[in-house]
Image 1 (cartoon, rainbow, N blue to C red):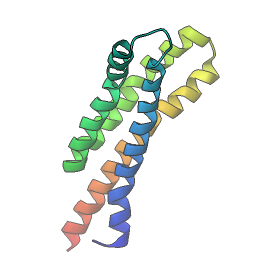
Image 2 (cartoon, helix red, strand yellow; image 1 turned 45 degrees about the vertical axis):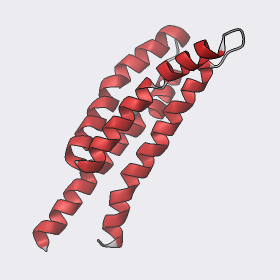
Image 3 (spheres, rainbow, N blue to C red; image 1 turned 60 degrees about the vertical axis):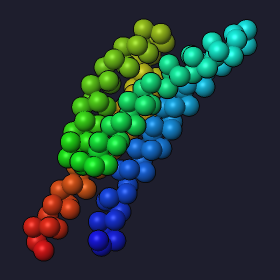
Image 4 (spheres, one colour; image 1 turned 135 degrees about the vertical axis):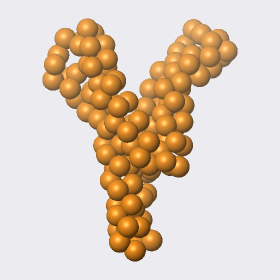
Length: 129
């Protein structure tokens, strides 16, 4: 595998892992004073469910880049209106909501595009070889 293909192979995987770690950080808000350790651990596990779903998507994308790329694009674009409305109802600022979307859902759209790019570059390399 050439250096260019290695970069296209690893870039979406590394960015996806970083994006999942970023999403996982939001689970840390489940630790609050006044709750028992079991309540805090239960809330922490529940808050990690989105990260676990994204991890499953990453495992699928790791094996089947075309399917994974489409799944990440659909997930990112599909969740954007939901995340926008949820935050707009809380803070009533379009600019802030767009900033939140750019941090939470758009990275997964980018990851999906990178997985698709990697798939098509590898396919093109196989066809020319």
